[in-house]
Image (tube, rainbow, N blue to C red; front, side, top):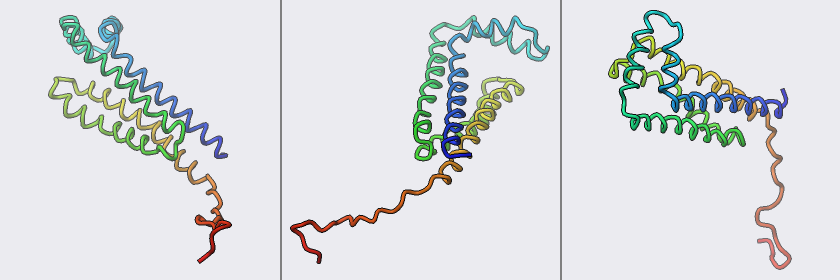
Length: 173
């Protein structure tokens, strides 16, 4: 694979990740409508009480509190903007990929710590954790391609210019 092909592949995976990140965040805007729709669909019997509980809680919540999920959605969009850096210069901005990978890993303890405190069923905690795992996979691919891309770049030839050239009016010491 040529360096240019690898760069295209890096950018495709970054765009995929950003779109997935933004879609997962934007779904927080119509939360009540989504839960109403999900509750009307066929589901396993163990999930019905959970969706009923969530729907009841959302329907009985002051709409003011949904402002918090609006900010959650906005945060996903803003985080997606951070990937402009690795899209433009992946080697220089690989640290953003490292940061994003750490964030994906951090989803796991958050779900297992906050889930029981908030009364979230274990099976739903696993769904929450899957977002971190599924986010980590494309980031790992991007990371691998960036490393290979960086290794394939030929270093610029060293400059043979003297950093302190002797001018017409100067003499060498």
